[in-house]
Image 1: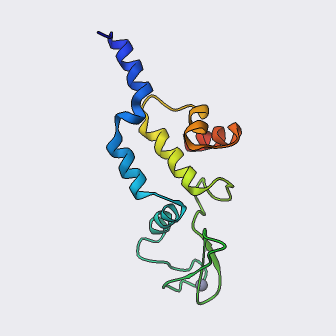
Image 2 (image 1 turned 90 degrees about the horizontal axis):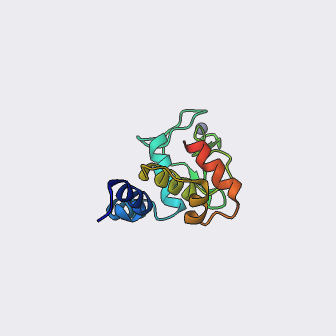
Image 3 (image 1 turned 30 degrees about the vertical axis):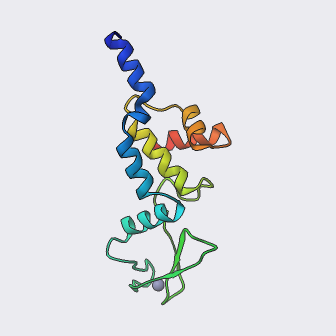
Length: 136
Ligand SMILES: [Zn+2]
């Protein structure tokens, strides 16, 4: 038998695998960068895209070379999907941001920058540290 303290320590260690349903749901909801961007787009324009500059509504231009930007069909103004979020102008992919946010909130005991770095395959420790700092 484990003591209560040992049990809670073990729970902290296993907390990622302890909640496999949430983990799977998250994976299904956000399988890739495009899914994350679409989610942000729906958050920012829940009733469909509206241009900040000319207020024209309707489907914007989408450039595959600039997936974070929508372009107004009426006035050609760019609208950044990540504007106003911590992800704006970040070199880190939105997918990694989403996973970092998920892992930080999913684990009640808290997650370390080193753990984030390992789990998300982030090359530089500093990047993981900054993600953690900005999301906390
Ligand atoms: Zn416009």
